[in-house]
Image (tube, rainbow, N blue to C red):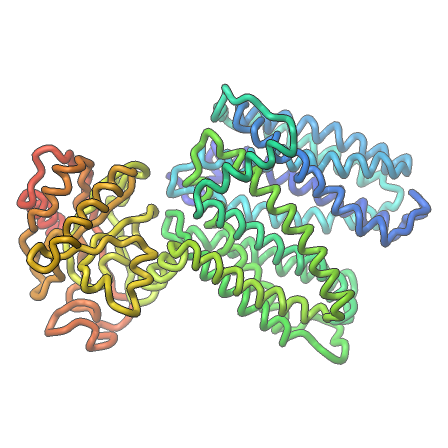
Length: 614
């Protein structure tokens, strides 16, 4: 396993990274060069109003996403992804030759055709781009790999836009731009030749070339799992948010700040840098696994600093340059945007079956395009018809971001629960994990652990990338304020036979059903939180569970929590705030799974005891 920067030394990642980087770079060099040419030298090309063309051209680039995403998502699943990537790069060289002809001969039809075809180029490569990662990266590398890709994409966009505008400024005839886009395309093809073989996910797939029926089928496929579907919507919402800001940056720079092209480029650079920094931070903050708890954190930042951008915006006199507060807001919006979007991509890759992963990514591209178009329509309505200012548009978008986030997290409480656990282990505690690789990446398993404090389930949840069904005392489960959270987290309430035999029987039924469905179930066999810090005898319920549903058993041990605020040392828990201060070091030790055959409560207790003494 390599760190995210170490991946750049790996042949399984480096050629792919530079292939996608050069593709995004060339997209933006050509697109920006064309828009700059149309904006300032339209008379060379056409008698059509330049403002109309500048408005229509981005839509022409996005159009192939609607038409072709679904069919080519199937192509990416049916064929070897490395072959598809190389074919796309050859296609890009041909497109750039057409673009060069358009620049040199001042042929608008050739340039517009090339723009549409570059949109098609991106449409074909998109499903390959994200589906490739899960084939060549270990699960613990997915967040870092996605962070590198997102950072590279936004850097490529920024550099491409700057270079594209500069090429037309220094040579309006388009000669240098023609050479530039062809050279970049050839470099992309040369790099793509080193992408390692990536076998087809579903070679027997029969491709449906009808864009309507295949799009509908892809969207239905993506909607089979709520967490994946809402992650797709969350990513698409980010593109709505980002497109709203980016589309208004030129007018904001000129009409509100009173700056020039340099101010616009500075805004774009600051925002893109923030996205890149946030994307790279994800690996560090997620501790090497897919940590969707960062998504609510990112959403909070997008709203807070989006709102502050409104208050930081000059509302009267032009200031001539970006203020410090505006700069800080832009870079933090970018950083929190990176924290928001990278875990969502990683979640989709980790939880989508490889045989149709490209089709789910294609569905994501369709939704992204739809949300970006919707962003343009909504911005037009708010600015032109409701007479909002650009600052008010940013404010409305930030507030609506909070509404969207609350809605999504209410539908999938796992996001919010993981956010709470992430905060816990990054504020009060410092968690060291050992043997997490022994928790199965898929399939059923019974996790057993000692019970030291009230936050034990949260600590285990923070360490495990997969959702866990926790078995918990029915009295705690039914607490009035917390019951809704436990229910949404799909905890399983249990009671002693002498208290409530019906609840006990129902618990065994739910545990069996969860394990039969391939889920992870965690229990604390001691039956209660320790009152003296010592491991208590394990109860026989674990044997009944395994007798009914034989699954691998994963022994775990929590250390360092005894004496903390949430433990029962010296009496009741949670009565002495910050008893041990902040950033307490704790650890979770995990042992290799055991066969359920012949396992007893006593033998499991001995295993956990041994882990505690390591």
